[in-house]
Image (cartoon, protein in one colour):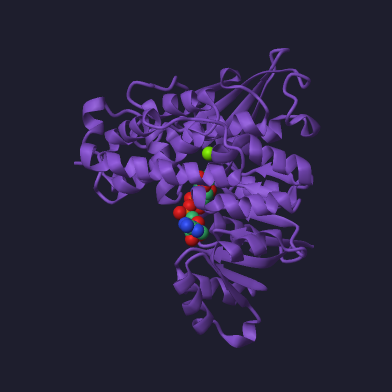
Length: 392
Ligand code: NAD
Ligand code: MG
């Protein structure tokens, strides 16, 4: 029996994780569920899964949850980042689903890594921000880091399991990272000026949280994933080639020196990589419908257009700059996406805000996590200062 903590239980990945867990009560027990502010959803999840702990990142929400939870459930309520880190590292827990969105997920995901857990990484921003320091923490504790992002999970499945960080030794020539291209793939630069948050969040293939949906539309998601792939598989951006594949059926590929290209295919449903990570190295039913290639008919591929979608270029450059540049990129992107979702920034100005933030900050190697968090805060402040200068 695996005892699981789900960080970000009320989100899209959290819900899919609970759906897989619900199908296998003999294999998985829920130790803790966490959320930010949604108390009503948390009450209903606690009734269904009877976790030992329920954590609300928001302290006021935690107080409301404690009032509303029936006593006989036996669920204890914790609050804030301390609570999140506690349930991510508790001795009874062996698996942690890291599915908080954005930089807010770094501290608890890191706590799980330091405690040597099986860490199922959906929260790519945590790894993008902290890179080498996060990978060092994993190596030191012997944690088992398994990728949940569909592309990285696909690559993981196409690599020999003991050579995940030894691509040269495994005979890998390139990683072919696929991308759907998002809802604006065919839009002209002109048309991109007027796109709305509702359009950006209506992804053609995947149903996801709002932040990652906007990232997919701007191709920043692919930029973050390029950086994520470099850290996970110990490689360089020039070894990773982004392929736009609008059908989102091939979730990524590995090209070997003998000419073999291995791909992982499946319906665009996050329950597949989640089930893969939860049960690895076994396979379990994820509730995903079988792939019907006859209905699909054909696969298409295109090169990404960095003129219309500069975020992918900005991410690659930030990784090349190194140090705290990816953390600054990530923080500025979070501020820009939130301003766009609130109607205060045009979609095409997301990369403008990020580029200006990057250019007005100095990048050095962060000495420790405190220095990194300080850089994240500074980047948010600098990005916020840009807002009145470029706002709609
Ligand atoms: P979501 O917005 O649906 O859910 C986010 C979760 O994080 C919620 O449970 C929310 O309560 C929690 N949260 C938000 N802010 C928080 C804070 N400040 N402190 C603590 N908890 C907080 O997002 P999602 O789509 O489920 O994505 C989660 C992560 O997984 C992201 O990093 C995303 O990039 C990654 N991911 C998602 C998908 C997908 O299909 N949804 C695919 C690949 C990777
Ligand atoms: Mg992905």
